[in-house]
Image (tube, rainbow, N blue to C red):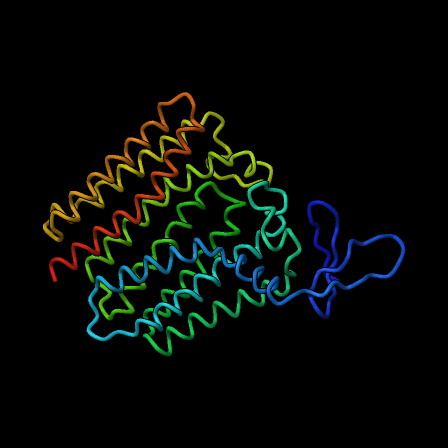
Length: 322
C-alpha cells in the first residue's frame, strides 16, 4: 500500500488499481471507489500545471516563428515541447507532494488531494518526458531534443530538490525557464536567431521579479514547508524587493539593448520601453512602499502582462519587416 495524507482525513491507495479508496477506519473492509475516466484525466491534466506548460510552449513557438523557418516541423515542435513541459512540471509536483500538502496555495493539487497516486504521477511524468524528447529527436532535430531534456533535468531534477536547500534555487530554476525560447530557435534550424536569443535573455531575468513577488505573497507557506527561499528568510522584505528591482534593471538593459543595436525597429523598441517603465515602477514601489504585500501583488500582475506585450511586439516587428 502507498499511504497518502489528505486534508482532511487519511486516504489509502489500492496498490493494484492506484485509485483512491474510502477513508481508512479501524474496522470494516476497505471499499474501492471507482474512478471515472474524466476524473483521472482531470487529475493528470492538473499534474502538468497547464498554465505554466502553456507559457513554455508559447515562448518556444514565438521563438520558432520569429526565426522564420522555411518549412519547419511546426506540429512536432509544438507537441514535443508540450509533452516535455508537462513532464518537467509533473516531476516537480511528484517531488514536492509532501510539502504541497502543507501549503495553502498547493494543497488542492492532485497528489495532496489523493486524486492520483504517487506511483501513477511518476509514471505519467516519465511518459511525458520521454515522449516529448523522443518526438523532438525523431521529428525535429537532436539539438531541440537535447534542450528539452536539459530543461526537464534542470527544472524537475535539479531546481526542485534545491528549493529545500538554498536561497539561490530561484536563479537556477530561471535557467530552465529560459531554455524553451532557445529550443524554438533550434527547432527552426537557427540556434543563433536574434529574436529567440533575445527572448531567452528576457525570460532569464523576467522570472526573478515575477517569482519574488509570488514568494513574498506566499512567504508564510514557504516557511511552513521549510523552503529557505529568499522571501521566506527575509523578515522585512527589503532584500526580496531589492533583488527584484536589481533584476528588473538588468531586464530593462537586456530588453532594450537590441533596439539600441538596431536589431529591431520602433514597434518592438517603443512597446518594450513602455512595458519596461511600467515594470520598473512596480518593482520600485515594491521596495519603497510600506504596504509591501499590496506592492508585491501589483508587481506580480505587471509581470504577468509584461511578457505577452513584449512577445507580441517582437512578432509584430518581424511580421512588418518581412
